[in-house]
Amino acid sequence: MTGLRRRARRRPLLALTLVAVPASWAVLLLPPLAWPGLLPLPVLVLGATWLVLLPLALLVTAAADGRSAVRGLLRSVLRWPRGPGRWPVAVLPVALPAGTVLLALLLGGGLSRPSGRAVLGELLALASAVLVIHLAEELVWTGVVQHRLAARHPPWTAALVTAGPFAAVHLPLLLVPGVTVDQLLSGAAGLLVLAVVVRLLAATVADTATCVLPAALLHGCFNASANEGRLVDAVVSGADTDLLGAGTAVLLGMGALAVRRSARRRGSASGSGREKSATTCSGVQVVADFDQGVGDHARGFMDPDTAPTLEGFRGPDDQIAVH
Image 1 (cartoon, rainbow, N blue to C red):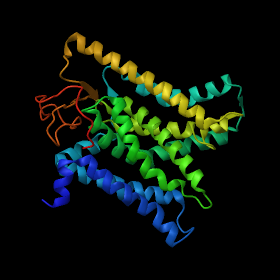
Image 2: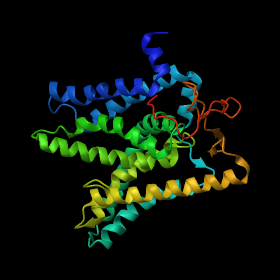
Image 3: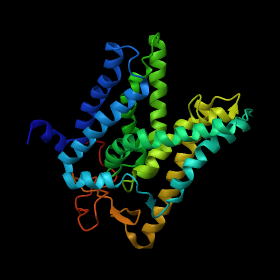
């Protein structure tokens, strides 16, 4: 076992972050510096996602948990949550853009009445972004990083910790020609806030089973709701869709987490017990592992016959550690 693999096994999330952030920066920054205008930004984002983030996440998972964990992680891509409190996950992708439009109208905005072709184009752009970018991206951030943290810490804590490296990977996107230092600093602050919002949405599915598809769909719907020139911005006029989309996402995400938490408590009171948090993901039962042993604490996508036991669970007072 090499030194790098040994470190990945002991601290998989720390190893992933320390390698993924600078490697992603290299992909996003070096080609534009060496060959200005040769590669468009979407191609660079695709390269950073598919050639850096995803392979590193799979390698770290293999080093920490074995190849069977990698296969289980890949099988989780198209799963959909089932179990207590699952309905907010199905509602949120529709409620997010609809709620942003409603909030804009309540605050004095108006409808711009776009053509059917324009709306269809935005919907197709959303679908393609989910399939091409966000599924792979959320396999890394939800399936590996946030799910591992949520197995040991509250979902709010896991979302906040994941937001740091998630925002750091996106920082090079702010380095446009002519940007000033003040603009860069304010943009970085705004990016961190948006990262927290996106991770809060992902927390609605990351604290139980590894189900990547709903997280990717939520990510895409948030981008369509809180970005200029996207779906919601094409529908409403006279409103700051960036701010309204983020505010709507925070309210809906917090509400969804509260509903799921209440549903799990009711399920626990009916006989499931406090030691296990079990859910169903496309018919496959998964058991969230709270064991403090390295490498075993996040195998929520494992089969129940091979899932580790709950011996060694230390409770909610665990210190935050990026593994």
